[in-house]
Length: 338
Image 1 (cartoon, rainbow, N blue to C red):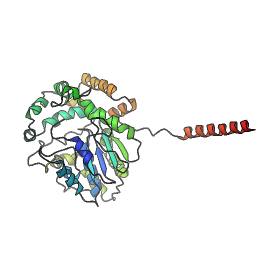
Image 2 (image 1 turned 30 degrees about the vertical axis):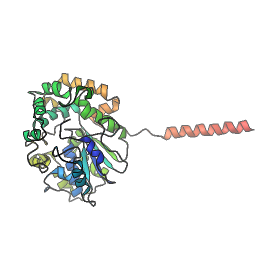
Image 3 (image 1 turned 45 degrees about the vertical axis):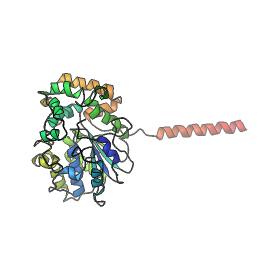
Image 4 (image 1 turned 60 degrees about the vertical axis):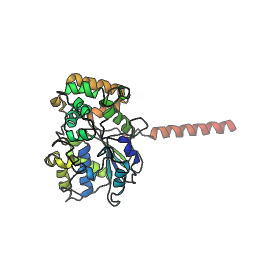
């Protein structure tokens, strides 16, 4: 794990009933979904300075000496009359990497992306982190290990072995693939039919921008007016976000640039991993690791492809059988008593 991330901190957040958790793996549409929430909440706001000030990220620490209480108090002070949302890259559960909080009185928007596309985007994203950030966290040596000449080298030397500061025994099979993507879908997939959980795939968001934003609005209970919708759709478009990318690069929380320009809002493409170095051999290797680490074939297929999520199986046949068995039992009892 890079030094400035502290996932256990989100366990200390005093969530309010009705808060929204935006749960998305790295490079899978997190910032986009945060902005969708903010635009729906405001009815279209082009004047905000930093999306990370609008939608906090509890896993992120701004400096090594920052006490947890400083962040916790900041989030607690957010207005109570405005819907809050928090970003996470984590999943719920009881495992060593499961830090997301799941409660029935919170709302969840969970987005996933084909890990082939997300992992090729992860390489330039890490490279875009400023040298000042690595120096602040005394981690320049880690930065050098991430700067590989091509994606094949990055995959073999960084993705599979895990983060440079992790001891080998702490790295799960599949390395970053499991830590970032496979563990995530394993944690959220069983909750897909919960009323307070919306699972949506990056492919759907790219292929049907307006439909996806409206689906998220309906799930969260936002009801923009007809006059607000054009602004919301414009400000959540990739074109607008690319033109205003400094708003999405954690620009106000640090005294220096955290990311090089364009480091957060990059291509936003679907189905074009090969353009960034994905090869058929690496794609096959990722599929191999997914078969090992994501046991549910339905979850595995949806992670890579998206599509409609099948509704939960109906309980009606079970109830009918149970009623028939009970009726038959009653008949047998009456006959025995005659």
